Image (cartoon, rainbow, N blue to C red; front, top):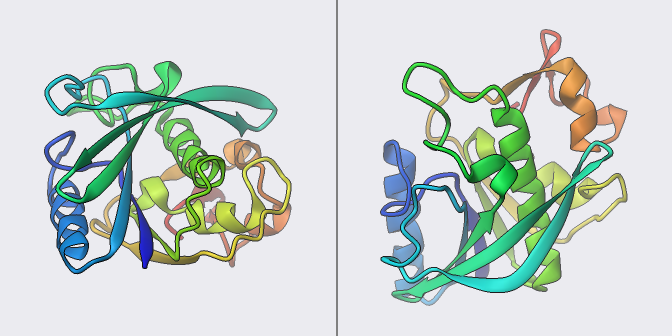
Length: 206
């Protein structure tokens, strides 16, 4: 079985709490059981690439947010039977902190992690990973099941991968103003009371 495990935090690279701990321990435990596990994480500025032997892969990922396209680069580390891919974006991740300061999150966190999620889908296709399961963690990866089906640019992808969603902290839903929905490139049917719309706003975890 092959699993792509998507998280915005993984110990020891970047973590603010329990999500990072689980994202380190669970994939390693699965690898011991013979599961082929591939983790994907943003390459934050704070991550020490030399210390953790993270190397560039010479792979670029082109991702749209609405009509604007952004480029991400892929880096890689292999350790204790687990492969970890890192998505680098100067636009979104070359800055201090994971989500912002202790007092305030970055105003563009919706865009940052929408880019990350679309980059994960593009990574799966570009590297022809063909996972049996994509395991998504918290709001920062919550749109991936939709993106695997509808595609990242408005073209139906209709992937065959199974998905699993784990919520580690229900206090954070990934809210965004309704006017940012166009950045998802998802069809209008994905913004209704039965899908992502919640009291006039986007709720990624819904």
